[in-house]
Image 1: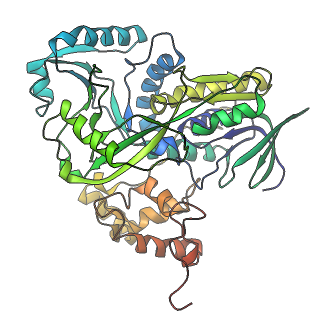
Image 2: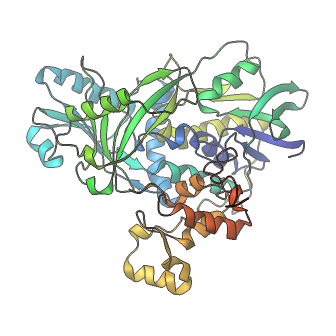
Length: 482
């Protein structure tokens, strides 16, 4: 990468950064997303609860509350436009003690104040009809019909691909090491070279405070809040029909139990503040907490069906709100910081807000009518494809008949597709995020060598060049005998 010049450089390729990029692609501007990892969706956006919050939890009047409700509406609208998976299953907050009913009513009132539609209290009998496996102690629940579940990988990739289709550049494996203000804007120093931009958008997740503190007089401190999860096999699907939360009590906030769009059940998270911003290790204590707390709302959760555990980090600021706007004393530097839960839900609204700020700063004009492509073709999902339609695909391309990942039913043709898309996959994990392969019960034990062979053939890579998740994660050291 040479000394590239842009109107806007966005630091961070999570859902917030890519949502901003997609919205800015509507304008006549040169935009680039720079990311320290090898792909989009490598931080908070890849490891979370994968749910669309209705918006009853955030404090009224906060930016978090406003953008949550707006983002929820936009996500439902965008799912068909950008072809990512979203299922409007709704959510339930379960109350196990009649004395706690006022707290549940207060949560409903907060949601109404925030503008959440359709909230109501369901009593024991209706609750059991909705969720047969709810615990016997449950007396009522808050029903939020606008709650949903989403594919966070698919959402992030869809935003990035649509942005790239509309002219946004992406630079990966480029960690920002320095920022300097000059007469024309900002010089951005990265491990991949130097860049120049009139405006910088800081969407760096748990590292957003470090970038902010490079340029601002006031200090920001983001704490990495770790959440640990258990993921159950598709054989557990149907144990719950909705996202089930526990009403926070003196016993704690509890964990959620929810279906996923991929046909699994997810349980978690914990909430532990950690110093290490790369600290995504799981712990025996954390997973034990998840296992015990899920039983407070849902009985007989089939924990024997766990196929993997994982942890993610949330970018928590003690003021507990999103921080979006131009940084005082740093003209042209826009924070999109402290985007913790419900950041995934809020990302479309965050994208619009940040893009609006940048548009007004630079006086950007919209592209001519028809110059912006708002849709994006999705990757074929054979799990959701009928046998008749699958046969049609095979007739057009026999590679659709070559199943590489048996657990998640992913074909060679799908893998080839994502290697050649506007934001192409270049690692095993990047392919996983786009197709689902290696995410099943064998966790890649069967399909990884086959995926590697396809990458070698399609990309002209040597076996030793194939990585799990970018440089430093090579799967092979050398060929046998060398």
